[in-house]
Amino acid sequence: MELKPYKTLLGRAQDEIVINKSRFLCYGAPCADETEALDFLKQVRGIHPDATHHCYAYALQPNMGIMRYSDDGEPGGTAGLPMMEVVKAKNVTNCIVVVTRYFGGILLGAGGLVRAYSQGAALAIDACGVGTVYPTARYMVDIAYNLWGRAEYFLASQPVELEDKSFTDKVSLTLIVKAQDEEKFITALTSALDGRVETLRLEELYKAWKA
Image (cartoon, one colour):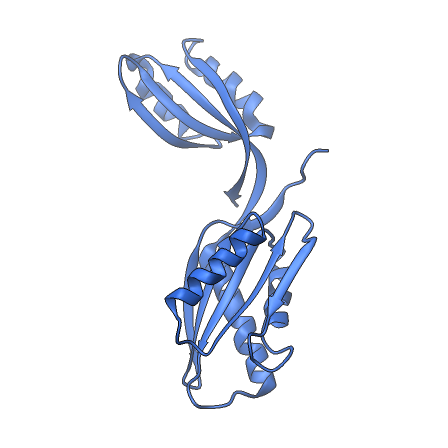
């Protein structure tokens, strides 16, 4: 069964807000499974061992089949669940958001906490950036030196990402392209270089592409 594209976070990132003297540190990360999600949570806790709370929410699987969240000592329903609702509203999965709070001495009340943790989750997601996961092909491409300028110009207009290049007796490129685009891309590349190019499909993977 072919995997349908789904949204996730592009990478790890963080942001911060201060509300009534309480400091909220907002972290997000992509994760493939619960082990990765909980490892990230452990890392955040390790960075801030003296924080008052480490509230979190994560969703896994393309259809969000697994959803977990925690208030971590905040009043029930004021942190983890609101964060989970933001994750669902942003429609991102295979990711975790953690909002770490340093209590500032002023009570925020239930409504204030819901707003704070919801905002924190949204800030974390926005900091990470959202991309769409597609089946992706990785290619090795070999070309002669005298064609490198033409190839470089051509690649700049293509829906590909250049991961690596090396210069030996030829120019060797490692690049990735969405599986849905690869046939058209390889045909266009071959045409642009008058057939003087060698391509090798190395593997298929799943990658989040920025919108």
